Length: 412
Image (tube, rainbow, N blue to C red; front, side):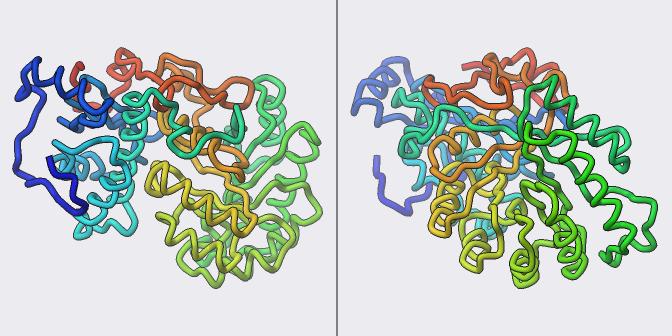
């Protein structure tokens, strides 16, 4: 079977595991030390978490399956269905080649950024899990080996009254003392009661004062027991963001995240250069090309890619490599299930400049039930030595929490 770069399979080709006899499958598994394995199908199932998580499975004629996850978004499963014929019959070990195939074939659907990149990322994560299982290597080894045995996790906190500084401080203390996290994040784009017109992105002085009260209450309550970041969700004008960052310089802020909208890089750069408060961004940038501009312009102090959104594990590794050239740490944004959370941790283990991986679902008591293994313990993720990602879907839990109308994955 030809492996010439750029060869694309007929999208109408039908090639399933049922077409292969047991004898043929046995020969396939025995040739080339596992190299002669072919993809037979790609399937998705959406789980109704605090976001609609899109789980992805890549099946092979060797009876080995890889599991991944795409960032949630309308149309992602349909895009993955569209790409499946381009993968069937291909060798799952050729991760980079298949990734570039999908980028090229999906250019009409917009493979520069957005949900098309997200869909490709879900497949790419599954391919890392699959390749690791075939080669009997943990995923971090496919990325060059590891720098650390565990990756720090920061907990994205929520309160019933997010506008109340003392409520935020109470929750911060609870998460540190009861849940064991030493890294936290709180939202700052919360109502203060002083707004006149939120659409104009301008912060009045009473609004800034209220946000300073939140930061002061939380950071003073936890002291040196935890690092605390604060998220603005792209809400403010450049001038207001500079004034807010300036007002927070007196406090121990781990970072101030996305204070301005993501489109205008020059404004992002000026905000970052105007303050000693560390500025983080990157969640709404796609692939290494867009992150490279942030880093080359020194428009961030911390880069925050979201792995199943930005393009996958190798793309996140590429972003980290560029960041490392500018001595910028990587704090991975993450709102995923245990699958993509572990994929982020695997990348975090394999890069020198990993700062932390986000956990966004601490109020969802069944989050960890989706996989058979424990993922987060005492505020960190220990990197497993099992092949692939090192997590196994609990199909009963997946079935229990599927989005209405979804179908469970096929059995192996």
